[in-house]
Image (tube, rainbow, N blue to C red; front, side, top):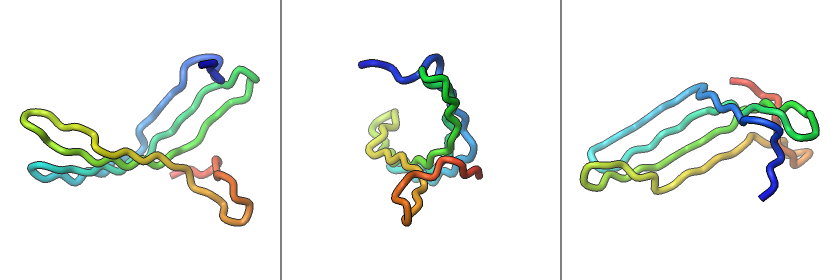
Amino acid sequence: MVSRWSGPIGQELGQLDVAAGDAVAAAWMLIRAHGTLKTGAKVDYWVRVSNAFRRSEDRWTITHEHVSLPDDMRSRTAVLDLTP
């Protein structure tokens, strides 16, 4: 696999909400992803993430994860310049 990145990819947690019970839990978060592509272009955008967890014995396991970007319905493209 060829990397598109020229260096490390930064990730910053912007917001986190968690709802947990004894056996299942869910988390919703915003994550800022940033770095530099090999072309020299700077990348800096926020993604939405939701996770579902299930507890078995003494540990939690991620059973579902969804990562998405907001989209512009007219142009059918991702909107990368939004901030929380």
